[in-house]
Length: 268
Ligand code: ACO
Image (cartoon, rainbow, N blue to C red; front, side, top):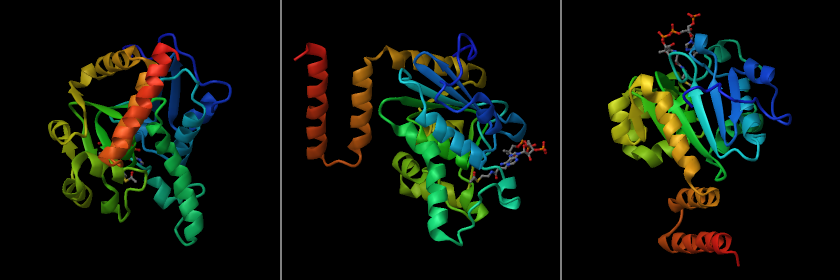
């Protein structure tokens, strides 16, 4: 991770073309078991368009099989300033204004696919965030399993201040992480949460100085890859189920996953 470009290759033939991703403000580098997705419109503070979200979904659909860890990062001074505000004024290609509820529902569902794959159990997803992490960018970080933040991070859920709701899958993880009261306070005031508070609220698992972000993420990735792959997949599946399950269901899920592990390890 220290040198994100060392020994890397671009997306597989089945995945989106490099130029297509570049047009969507994205860059994908796959280095063995690690895929790094960079939000790459620094001159626009990595503001995201519909193409960005479709590009993220395409990356999720076409990840090479051996990828175990996906890192999301932002180029330039910020992780992401959220939706590209010109999408509102210019309409944006394929913009759905809500007049056709079914079409708008499908439209948003398609964009949400850019986020939902990050919960897949076969990969661990890490958001490496710095600078502004706003709206759709904040939701992207929330869609990841683990957030590593630089000490200049500024999280803000801006949507309600613009008359909208956060609709890119972020409301559930936000409430799960900070609780309903804090989630309401953060969303309805659209205030900015800085690094120290983010760590306290659990919005960032790790906070490091800005110039140590790449190294911290590299170290985390190394640790994640050191774990048995099957155990990592089964444990992620188990942990994400925990909040929804009763204790009884979760105990049963633990037994089921452990039987799979024991079979793999001891070969019956
Ligand atoms: N959409 C489109 N362009 C943007 C966006 C955006 N969300 N954010 C920044 N830019 C552009 C700016 O217009 C500016 O362009 P210019 O150089 O042509 O003037 C350039 O990126 C740099 O932005 P600055 O404002 O100069 O950078 P600064 O570091 O001072 O501020 C900040 C960054 C705080 C992120 C500010 O740009 C901002 O508030 N952006 C809007 C954030 C926003 O409201 N996002 C929507 C959230 S809701 C959602 O995501 C659904």
